[in-house]
Length: 177
Image (cartoon, rainbow, N blue to C red; front, side, top):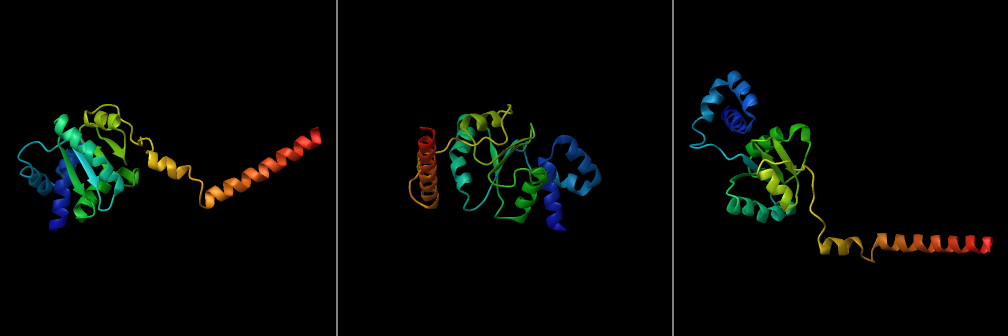
């Protein structure tokens, strides 16, 4: 019962106003519990992260930038730490649309960002602007090097296909010449 009350309390604090009012009307004890939860207005920006999440680590400098330079507070939840945090994440990620971490949610605009994103997109989201939900940053030089490496199974298959293609092209040129 205590876990359910806590979940209802946290969920009400982060639901859109109409949905929170409707839920509060059906669960008066949860509505009464929400009021003392925050002494001031809770932050409108919410971030969910997990342990051993590389993309979450990549986004930390952007989150610090938004908090420090833009004066926006981001409430962070570690979904691996408590079941309540995971339940709140699942409630905000409607129908498992994102399905992964990091997950960013703006309570004011009800916009979300799934995964890592660019600085411009993240700042738009933080300001309540027209941000993209799925907008990955460009690959790093290291990622490009891995993509275009010349060793491994894919590289051997590509070389084999190039040899077959070149052999076929030369035979076709011999027939036409």
